[in-house]
Length: 232
Image (cartoon, rainbow, N blue to C red):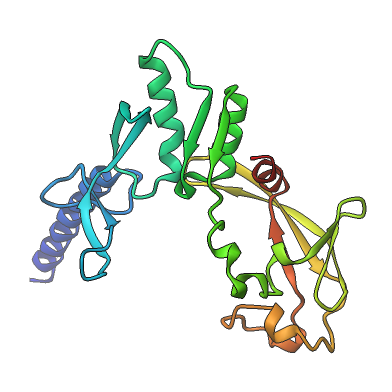
């Protein structure tokens, strides 16, 4: 009977809805979890002996080391290191009877939010810039599309491209990270990109529906992040 089939279909939908709701509850703010260990998250592991990247369910273990002694340790389900630094420092301060003045971390922990937190917490950060290694390569230094390879006029607040054109202030936008931190980005737009011989090397992105001839060079950067990185 049509009514019976409709009832059975509805019951199937309800069962699926319950299943999806339970999975979303288990996953929480994560993007994935293991069915055999609901607390673990799928993460890109270090390469094995054959140089293959491994995507496996696991945990992110953070160690705080002082003079070769492990003084603090946390285990979390975040696949990347960036959002783990602030919770690590907070939990360490709550349990130890003192606060470390100098925080040393590798490039995986660099972010505007982390820089700002450490500074406002009365500490000094020594974090390796994420682009430190690649910025020393010849390919990076010759890439005219990068903001790092353009001259900046601080008084006029504009950049100069390879073709000696100004990239002037266009607008500011707000971006929210997964941790809820809101950063302010400044967008600069080239005043005139028409008939530029460097256009194909300067404007990247082949997925745009707008033809290259009609596009203008845009730069998006955080002034606060640049200031903090330069200070570090």
